[in-house]
Image (tube, rainbow, N blue to C red; front, side, top):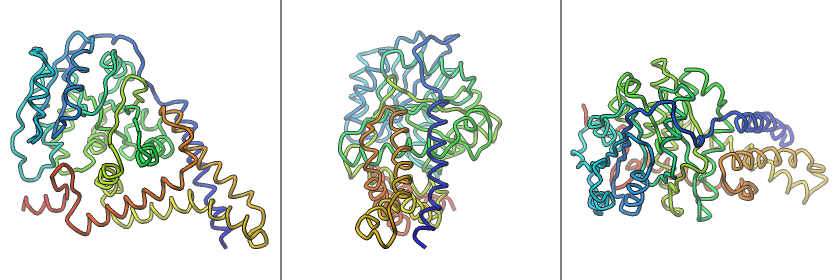
Length: 383
């Protein structure tokens, strides 16, 4: 019976590995070249308690050699001096505006409200939302604008190279790219407007002004925890061209620092990423144990009890497919290859994260930066 169940794991693993290989060849990368035309650009940074990052963020963005842009930073009720640090980093540069955010209205989540306020003050033809912890290398802004034009995109999402230092970061954060490159057919993401193939990353998300207004702005996703994917899905439903690209050496980000941030950061999004359905998240967790941990259990059992399951050739092949797909996505996204061999440990940590998501869902709701992100509580407030 166990043999039969694990043989059935071969199908999903083959699909994931083949998808990762195809996507590694086809997904666009940002390139260092000048745009065909220099649109007026608004760089928009929502910032809540970002004292650790905001000074570097402002300096790097103001150092971009693009000829026509403004930088708007919105201080979202920070308590750590974020606004003062941003102004000091700007050194009086006229391209910088530091805005004081308005109080969070009922029915809104914090980031969407901050982004909506930024968009209302922006004057650019291209609106680029970026997080304060994203590192923009010289030439990155030209590359984003040029990539938008070269890909004929109404909406473009750039995936920064994810920097991971601690073991929890190294084991969990790269799974984002495993999901993106191993589960989504990039060519369909880029060449169709089908909403099921929407993929986006709010760390760097750019809209033409017309596209943003046609979608309805962040007001259209004001209750969505994963607002970036929701915006991408709306763009496709409106017939707009939405694409993704890898940031490579031009954009990078250390999104979480240490296990506590990793656990809480992923837990606040994972249930929303499964449509808000706990049953679907549970099925997903069991599925990943089955395909990524099951073959290891089978192999060890076969070595210890060779007469019970026979020589473990099949589980070795399944392990090769899983680890190979993880390593391929790591290579494509400029991450550590060796960490792919620890895929079972990564799945184990994701199980803990899933448990945190369930605890929040059936308890007080997800918490992030001092706010409750529970969408059902937001809806109750609106009644």
